[in-house]
Image 1 (spheres, rainbow, N blue to C red):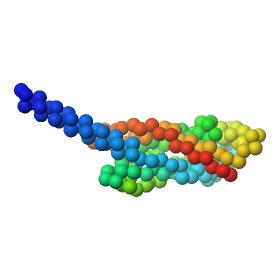
Image 2: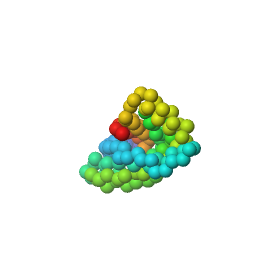
Image 3: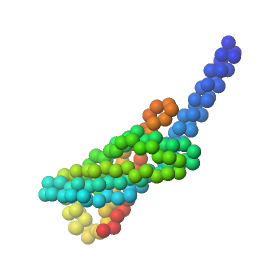
Image 4: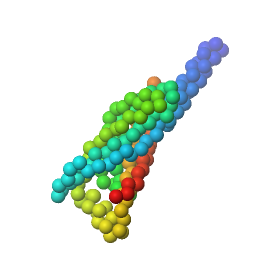
Length: 152
């Protein structure tokens, strides 16, 4: 009985170490908004192409991103939902995740009017959401906030 208990404890400890290692891999990614560019516009909406760099800072393990779900904010105003799919990021490598958004002009228009009235020439982009990483223990959600200030 003692042997069985010892083996069970050893397996439990090994899986706990694996969990910590997997979470370290997911946490060890860095995120950066590379660009947010208008690709098309009309009187009713604006099409915005957003690129997010995901850098795997781990030198040994591949980071497996299943998906990202979140929201895009411009000057602290939520303007659109944003998501992208699966990416595998090799150790010490960077992948560029891309999303094309259609934003109703009514949401962006308020921001533009605010910039003009405040005599501001910069735009603050923020992406807030959850990255879902695939690990040996299943999917691990990681909340992220990515910001960028862009001068016009």
